[in-house]
Amino acid sequence: EIVLTQAPATLSLSPGERATLSCRASQSVSSYLAWYQQKPGQAPRLLIYDASNRATGIPARFSGSGSGTDFTLTITSLEPEDFAVYYCQQRSNWPPFTFGPGTKVDIK
Amino acid sequence: EVQLVESGGGLVQPGGSLRLSCAASGFTFSTYEMNWVRQAPGKGLEWVSYISSSGSTKYYADSVLGRFTISRDNAKNSLYLQMNSLRAEDTAVYHCARGADTFDNWGQGTLVTVSS
Image (cartoon, each protein chain N blue to C red):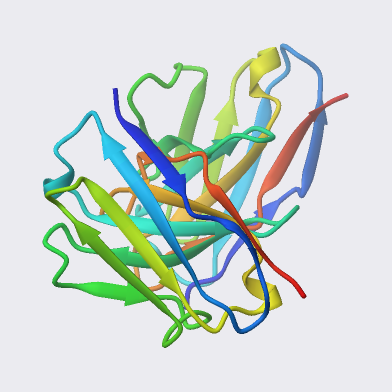
């Protein structure tokens, strides 16, 4: 089973600042990595698939990069609605699909 | 608009059973693979089960293998999860999620609480 780790666990930033979130895989997942956003009481929302492709309707301030074992989700300028928990998920070697533990982006 | 609406959650005693449903609309359900993903209170996401578009292929997380059964009725645009021998650690919000291996639409979820 591929284990995903995310850093940091919590990121405290102000609106307008840049957010950089990391996801690391225990073995190569090629580019088969997705990012999801989840707000309290809501379902997760797909942001990025295959490491760098924005899902339908996702603003351009969200971008993904990386391949192999190291991936990054960048939010160039935080909007108030971006404060949430972000999860990475691999689809390289399944079952099982695995998720990272999440990074919470909160308001500083 | 794609909609996924789960139902069937509730309070059940350890060892009990529940059947969850997910009603799909706004897309051609029969052509999509589907999954169940759960989230324990205050915790992260855990994939539970996958089913192919025809229902012929199914996969399960080790934590539920032999206790949970995924199924679908394409005529009714519905996905199901039969949960038997429930344990306290199965307590979670259960989401249905569309997609083969990347989950592009999710339902709000239904809460399952296993407690005596």
